[in-house]
Amino acid sequence: MKILLIGEYSRLHNSLKEGLQKLGNEVTILGFKDGFKDFPVDFPLEKKWDNGALKKVKLAVLKLTGFDISSYLTYQQVKKNKPLFKEADIVQLINENSFFCNYYYEKKILKFFFKRNKKVFLLSCGDDYPYVKYNFEHPENKSIVQPYLAGKIEDKNFSNVLKFRTAAFEKLHHYIYRNINCVIASDLDYHIPLQNHSKYIGLIPNPINIDNFSKTELEINDKIVIFHGINRESYFKKGNDYFEAALAIIEKKYPEKVTVLVTENVPYEDYINRYNQAHIVLDQVYGHDQGYNALEAMAKGKVVFTGAEDIFENYYNITKKVAINALPNVDYLVQELSFLIENPEEIKAISKRARTFIEEEHDYLKIAEKYLEVWEKY
View 1: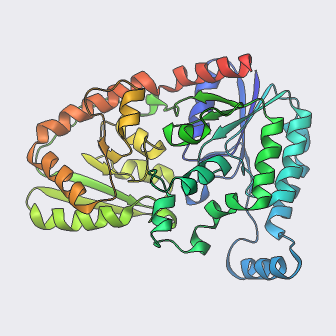
View 2: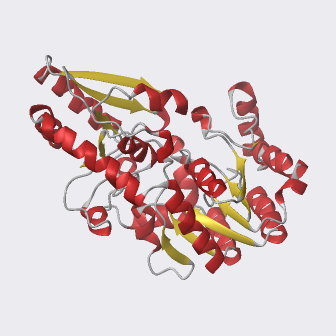
């Protein structure tokens, strides 16, 4: 099949592409490279007028006239290459706002893909209208909306979430759902808001290319190494404030037993190699399920603090921990870290189970086969 994957978050579409290609399909990716993470993309888009003086000019023009220069320039980049993006058997959008344009230009771009290709599918992966709506209506639900409601994130730093509460993006949501074949959730956080929706066909777990992560046994010879990777743009969304506070206590409590590694805003290839020597990886506190960074760390046999709620364990029939369920609670995080530091054999046990879980539930070839089944059926 000829398959076009639009957009890239955290290497999801790259891993899916690798699986689909191994199964004999022709696959290309169109989209942005996910910022500083710099993921490979066959047809890269560049978000223009988005930094420095040009961004200030763009915002002034937007305020005075309503014209979004960045959206227009993204549309022009796609328009110039339109002949390359038609007659695909399958097109998959990674998000309801895959091109990061305003309503007018996003719809204009999508209209071409809906008209010129056989089938179009949508992933609920990252913020979108159903996810944001649900979490504002259910503030008790563990999600990135909680730190915003707690006043930790300013509106201007939460605009990529808040835009899905506007009338324009509600309209875009309905336009997309009228034209797609169906929508697929990438993990349980996006599954929860979509339950009982007529276009929702279920969850397909994130694909992990386990060929890229050799199976090794975790060794603890001296100190236990804890890795904390920070993305400043999502600092509070991930609960990094809780992790930093917990680590400050842990370093004082166990100065002879732990080494803490911290990194900020590094490209993907650098990031995944920086935690190779770590035993424990701190990922995020506001999820029910694991995101992509957590899954790749688990593939490497790391003990990951991430989403691993009861709904996750029930869904996958897990009876022994494959990850540590992280909560926005410093005392709880200190307690969980302390237990692992004082019981290093448990680190080794969870490490083995984490790798086995990825092999059984997230192997990129198995996941690619699941996508092919859904695409053919719908």
